[in-house]
Amino acid sequence: MKNSMGNVLILTLFGESHGPYIGAVLDGLAPGMPVDEAFIRDQLALRRPYGKISTSRVEADEFVLASGVFNGKTTGTPLTILIPNTQQQSRDYEENRFLPRPSHADYTAYVKYRGFEDYRGGGHFSGRLTAALVAAGAVVLPALKEKGIIIGTHIRTLGKREDMPFSEDSEILAGQIQRINEQRFAVLDADAADGMIKAIEEAAADKDSIGGTLETAIAGMPAGIGEPWFDTLEGEIAKWVFSIPGIKGVEFGNAFSLTEKTGSEYNDAFSITEDGQIITKTNHNAGVNGGISNGMPIIFRTAVKPTPSIFRPQETVDLKRGEKTVLTLSGRHDPAIIHRVRVVQDSVTALAMADLLSLHYGTDYLGK
Ligand SMILES: Cc1cc2nc3c(=O)[nH]c(=O)nc-3n(C[C@H](O)[C@H](O)[C@H](O)COP(=O)(O)O)c2cc1C
Image 1 (spheres, rainbow, N blue to C red):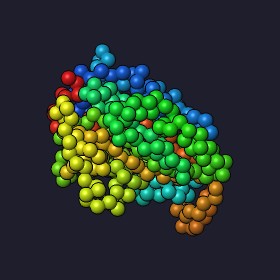
Image 2 (cartoon, rainbow, N blue to C red):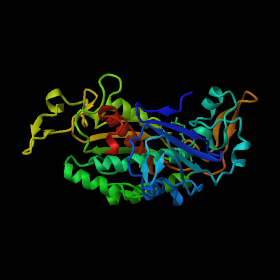
Image 3 (spheres, rainbow, N blue to C red):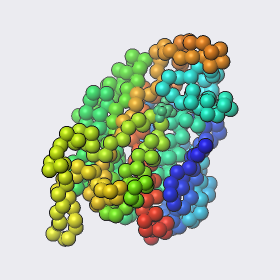
Image 4 (cartoon, rainbow, N blue to C red):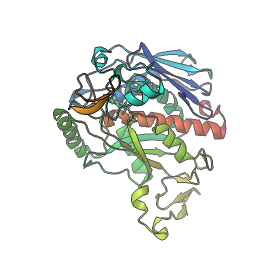
């Protein structure tokens, strides 16, 4: 029953949706990293629900840095983030205690934890815990930026609606990352936002939910990071993003559609810039060769499923009676999670990169 992740920068995640606190412990941080509480707050605000496109459970996310920070810098000892839960409505979950929601983790948690799990609001499996991932990510993102590494995620598709892809030009890409990091609903083409928001509102009005794909870019990652075979850059990113509830697929670059190309079309030819930097002329391999970064932008997409809790009647089984039944939910749920997951994806990507960089250069690297 593992709740920790990382090779040398180890994150432990704890809490339940309706318990008193959620939080995270980060162990293996370099001493001397600046901790910007205002930035942590801004990042948490990007995850916070708003309007008709989100759940009406809105938490203030008043976090406490309970250890590991002194005079605004990391000490290098375990850093503990505590975030109180204040907006619980547990009665919504009592009547359906033994009626698992289709597509949610109620049934699997019931089996694994033998009925001892805190089932209220999805318990330990709730998207609520991703607030702690965002706060932890916000501890390492500024240190990565200091090293010239920037990360950004946008909503590439929502239902059948599309945003434009990231640019292949490094300078334009850097500008795009900067721009989307300031947006609450992150799209590259401003015109795409209205249609996507309308699609979420329509799904909500229809007592339904909707999913989509997120696209993330990591720019400025030095070549040579990642391990061969088992702790590959792709494998580590995949493991971190699959920790996010609701993610069901990962693709590096346009991996699946690019399989239609031949080798001569697919291969990324090497070139060299005037200042002697090795680059590739195309980036079909999405910045990774042999599990190791090649210095080009690392681009990946994830599939975010439609929110499981919908307000239409759904078939399920009463686990206590052992009978088929119909579940009709009430309570508060997101009609889509993708616009909230986007900053979570940035955060776990930052943690994955911080861990691999610390593995390669040593744990002091991000504090220097
Ligand atoms: C930020 C965020 C918010 C979420 N909100 C809800 C929600 O309101 N209702 C719901 O049923 N699922 C919600 N989810 C998704 C479930 O937590 C997730 O589907 C469930 O734990 C099962 O995990 P899986 O989809 O990875 O299999 C949310 C996920 C995230 C990341």
